[in-house]
Length: 118
Image (cartoon, rainbow, N blue to C red; front, top):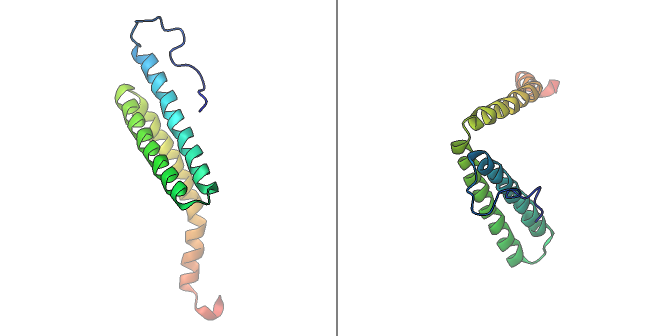
């Protein structure tokens, strides 16, 4: 698995990470977990062997749980993390609502029409 950068580069031996360094290291850990999920699911999708598919999928799901643990830790350690996550979620919700409107209008129009007019 590749690492974007070494989270411990430049940290003198024996010194503890600062909070900022720890947050950056956890972000790298989160990325590594997501990369592992991708890798294991791609392998499971490409495998013909049922046992291999099952084990790889199970391991991928464990990595997803690890990602959740790192994400929660980031929320607790970084005072503004929740704010940015909420903003991002709001953006997706807004886009999803805009995309859903035309489909909902069409569905509602179809419901109002009789089968003969469709």
